[in-house]
Image (cartoon, rainbow, N blue to C red; front, side, top):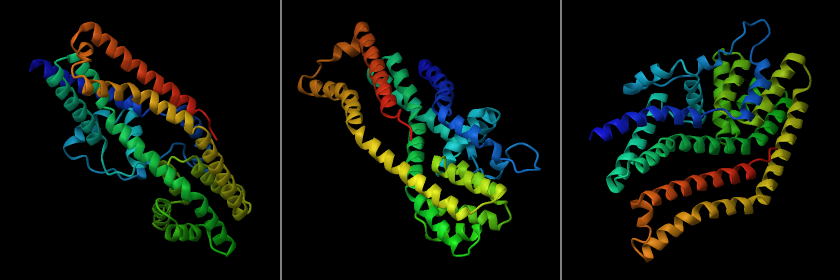
Amino acid sequence: MALIIASFLLMVTLTFSVVMFSTRPTTEQKALDKRIGHIKVAPGQVGGDTSGLLLATPDSGAFSFIDDLIEKYKVSEQLRLLLLQSDTNMTIGKLIGVCGGVGFALLAVTYLFKSNFLLAFLVGLQGCAWPILFFNFKRKRRVDAFNAGLADSIDMMSRSLRAGHSVVAAIGIVAEQAVEPVKFEFNEVFKKQNYGLPLRDCLMELLDRVPSQDLRVLVTGMLVQKETGGNLAEILDRICFVIRERLRIKGEIRTHTAQGRLTGWILCLLPIVMLFAINWINPGYSDVLFETPTGNKLLYLGVALLFTGGFIIRKIINGIEV
């Protein structure tokens, strides 16, 4: 019992490490944030990005103490953006509580069946990352859906401007007629602008909610045009053309790399499938891996090499940027 309690405390501690590692910004995100940072403050304003303060924060309830503990750390802002961009009402405290709960549950179940604390600890540790991976997947799916409908929405804005509508009215038309989730996000911009929030701040909040490169191009073009002047309709037409070409090229790249992705899945899943298949045909065949010290070491080494190989294949396949 004491071992289980100690492992739980250790799991809670390591959960923070897993969360911080899983939500760290990529090199591409850092570069994009640096490039757009100079337009986040309007001329004549005091420096500093205050747009994040305008975003509503739901109540954490019983997990509010966790929010207070990590509020001063940078991981707090990264988790808040992750939850915001995945379109969920869960708070940071609840997310960390879920991570710790899933990790401890897997640790306890694995230790109960295998009586191997190291194996149970490794299983529980990777279980802590499951909720983070789920919200990352949810965010990616939402951003992909947003990018798929953004080009048509920009085209709609351009036509509205040529018809004599203002920029805000054009955003309102997109908020009424675009597909989801573009419709929802532009509706938020339209409503907040009507409530008196400057258009610049509304667009910056939109960038916080939707981490899309195509959207950054659109917002940058609109803000630069607002400061320097020019024909916004023509700018939107060119942005729309670039986004559509980019989506086309990404589709071609995805087609050409389909074999590599399939190879990666086969190489990663084949050892696991064969392990279950052999044990189903010949029960107890792999007990030596789980019940002997040498077998445990080989099992840990195999799992580590499996994850390393999958990570390398993923980096090779996703290394092409458009």
